[in-house]
Each structure stands twice: as structure tokens, then as C-alpha cells.
Image (cartoon, rainbow, N blue to C red; front, side, top):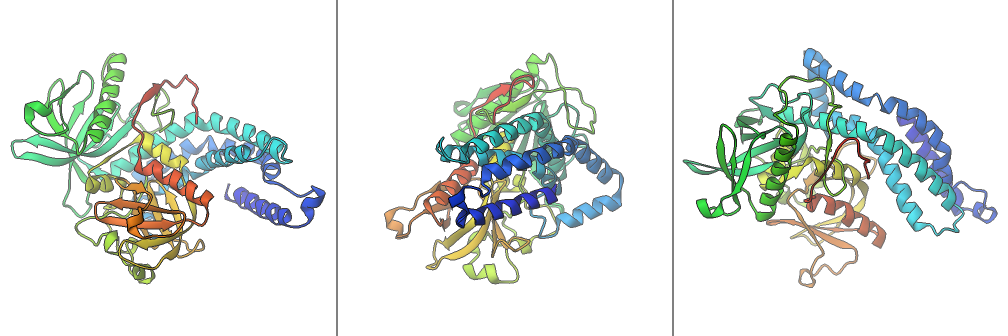
Length: 471
């Protein structure tokens, strides 16, 4: 798989060099659509292996479960700086690569006029890749859900059967739970059959301890701001337990109530609660939840926790120092999306994760801190809601990272005295960063992908697995 992509990259580089030479006068040089179309057949052979990816994920998880040696090997690898995402996330990348090729060809076909010499080959390549993506689409959704359940299992203690057949992850995030002691921050995990609420542990593992499980079958939601005098407050009435929770904003409240009501409706349509037994493979007998036509990806990022310096305290010189934000990581798992949502008091859905998979980008950016004068050129990789910073594209591990959940994306105002073109601003509370792109096109692309992380999806629609899936 890797060898194929390396050879394809070399062909593109050759085509680019020929396009810049006099070969274009004869019209016999290789072009992007031409190269892609020629490589489609070998890609089709690779899809045979991609269809077996679910077996790889299952066997890896079973191996980790049954072998302490393999468990330690995977854990030690994930602690290395080169492994900036969870290991099983990387295993899904070959599937995602096909989807990215499809997106590239879509943009190219929009750019080419119909009379361009590469237009016909580009359209043909797009049609072939789209068919491959459609064939693997259902399998990819199941694997992403399977990966997410196993990743969440690492963050939770107090539940032994998180990964069961038919279970789908829907949303996770921070809510305040009303009790006799007042409002207490809790981390909630919504699945298609149960709602878990947890507290952040003070153990070395830094996991979240499960305090309660609320089956969603038969549950009712009631807005109760007036009853309790708490903003953005709602009540969840289960068959055996009732809890009152408050969101950090009206937007967050709407996201939670919308998702919970959707799952309640689905549970009622299924005529009963989901079965409670362990499963060892991605479920293949269930529908898929969608938002705005998007399908349902998972980051490992540095977070701004009280126990360690925040990224806002980092100066530009820190990027050249020996101990940067990622290098300050401790052995506990305090740097996952779960912890980011906890500290940012926000939430993220499985649909947001899948949209993040579609919105990945890398390239050079100039960065400036709020209180600094100079700009620093960095190679930036944006993936899974997070910006990873490198000195250059040749480095094998990031120097620092910035998770963007909870951040706002804007254009600097005149009063900020930036006076540069193609600049965008990222800010969360007192944390402010400016980034400058190299051209109008790259500026628009960075704005597009970062907006996917700073403006999560909100509207939901549900498609059964028999319906067609649209990217």
C-alpha cells in the first residue's frame, strides 16, 4: 500500500516537471488526470486488501486483549513522539486516502474548463475513484465506529462491556450535573443505547470514572431552566433514574437534546433496549447516523490542563527548545479529545469526527503569537481537530500542537494592526494566534478545513444502511 502511494507520488512529480518544460508544447507530457487514471487499476487491486481492514482491526484488538506483550508494545509505540495519533487511527488511513484522492479530483474537475486537455481523463479518474469509495463506504463507517469504541474504552474505567455488538458512539462532552452539592462538572458519553456520565479521575491513568448508566429506551427530555433557575438546563427522565444537567451554552444544549431525542426515537422504533452482550467485531446489522449528509475520526492532542503549561504560555523560542508541549507529555492519557472537551467545556459528535477525516491539510504557514512581533514559518499538519507544528515537512514528529475544539476562527480587525494579506485568527478566551498563508488559494483551503473543527455540525438526519450514502 505504501509502496503504491510512493510510486504514484513520484509519477506526479515527474508530470509536474514535464509540465514546466517544453514538453507541453508537444502535448505529450503526463498530466494529473492522466496519471491518476493509469493508476486506478492497481488501486482497484488494493481495495481487496482494504476490505479486510476490519479483520485487521479486530485481530489487533483481540491480540492486545490476550497478550500483555503486544499490549505493552502498542502502548510504548503510542507514547513515542512520532505516534501523534492513536495507533488504530493510522490503520484506517489507507481507506481515508482513497476518499482524499476523490476530493482532489473533484476540485481539479471544477478548476479545469471542459476544453482542457486533461479534463476528460480527470473526469474518468473521478468516476472510477468515486465508485471505489462507494464500495468501501459502509465498511469504513463500521470500522470508524469500532475504532472509536475501543479508543473510548481506554479513557473510561468502571465499565467492562463498552464494545458490544450493535453499539454506536454518538457524542461525548462536558455537562454540569445538578445534585445536592450544586452543579458538578461531569463528562457524558452518548451511545445509541445508553448514556454514561463520568467524573475525571485523579489517578495516574487520568481516566474518567463511570458514575451512572442511563438506558435510553423509554427516556424523556424536558427543558427545565425555569424550574431549577439554571441556564441551559434540561431534565432526563429514565425508567429508573432522573437527572438534571446544564450545558455551557444554548448551542451545546441543543446539540445534546437533539442527539438524545434522536436516539430515544430510534430505540422506540427498535421496540426495546439493545442487547447487552460483548462483541468482538464491528457491527454489521445496524443503520448509520448522519448529520447534514455527512457520515460519521479521533485525535490525540495536547491539552491545556492545570497541571502543565498551556500552549498560550509557549513563546516562539520554545519551538526551538528541547522541551516543547508534546515532549512534556506524561505517561497518563491526558491528551485525548475527551480531555480537550473536558477543559474546553464543549462536546463533539461522531459525525464531527467523520467530517474531520474529510478535512485534512498540510503545508507551510507563518505563525505569530498575540504579544509577539515576528512571524515564524512552520510546516503545519491539520488533522482530527488539531494543528500539529513541525520545523519542516522532513521532521518525523511534531514540536507542538494546538487542538481547535472550542476555538473561534475569524479575520483580524484593523485595530489588531496585522497589515498582512491572507491572515486568519484563532482564539479561545485569552489564547490568540495569527496564521498567514502563502496565497489566496491556500488561505481559502486553510479556512475551509479549520472551519470544520471550529464550527461543528449541528443538524441531524438518519439514514438506514440500505439507503445510498453521499460524501
